[in-house]
Structure formats: C-alpha cells, structure tokens
Amino acid sequence: MKRLLPLLGFLGLLALAQSPGAKLYSAHCQSCHQANGQGIPGVFPPLTHLDKVVQAKGGREYLIRVVLYGLQGPLTVEGKTYNGVMPPFRQLKDQEVADVLNYVLTTFAKSKAKPTTAAEVKAARAKALSPQDVLKSRPPVK
Image (cartoon, one colour):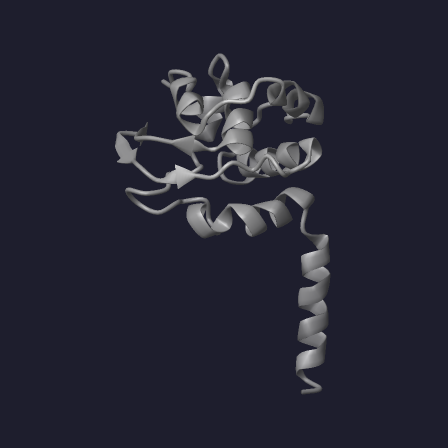
C-alpha cells in the first residue's frame, strides 16, 4: 500500500492539471467519441476532421450549435456515414462549451483556428434549434 501512495498522489496531481476542456470532454464526450477522438465506426464520428468544419463558412457557429443543441440524422464524415444521436449539452455554461470545443479542436483536429469564446456561445443560444435543424445547418466541407 505504501508503494501505491506516491503513484496515487501523482495521478491526483495529473487530474488537477487537466485543462477545463479536457475534464469536460472526459465527462461528456469521451464515452461516444472515445479518449482518442476517433469515435465509434458507423455510430459516432471521429473528431479529427473538425479543423475543416471550423474553417468553413459558418463552421464555428455550427460546432457551437452541435454542442448546445445536439445532432440527429445521418452524417457523412470523410466518406463514411454515421447515424448516432448526440444529446444536447445546454446545461453547460457558455465558457464550458467554449472550453470543450477548444480542447477538441486543438487536441484531436490539430486546428490553428482562433479559440471559441463564451461570447460566441452566448450568441448561439439566442436561437434554439432541434438536433435535426442543427444537422441541416452543417456547412459544406471540402
């Protein structure tokens, strides 16, 4: 047991050192999109392509709406179709939505896009959408 105490202490410090976005991802996203952001084939898409989405016209707003209002319906990502349901996360605060998006974009998509802000999330809350309407608003991605 005494040998485990330093390891447990180290793991505790590591958990404290996690970014807010990483903690939110672990709590709300990881079960579907997996720890590595690769998703589950046919059900939940990988997050590695999101730099293309965030760079597309309307892409930033779309990604915010996906987190706030969820997503439902067939979605094609890099030639593969996914048909899972993403629940809405309206309960998250504006800064938390920004934090999790920034974590996903920098960690999995390796994006250099400017960070999402709480103000952008607040603006997106002004118009509530259904998960199906969010899907319809997906910008074309090259």
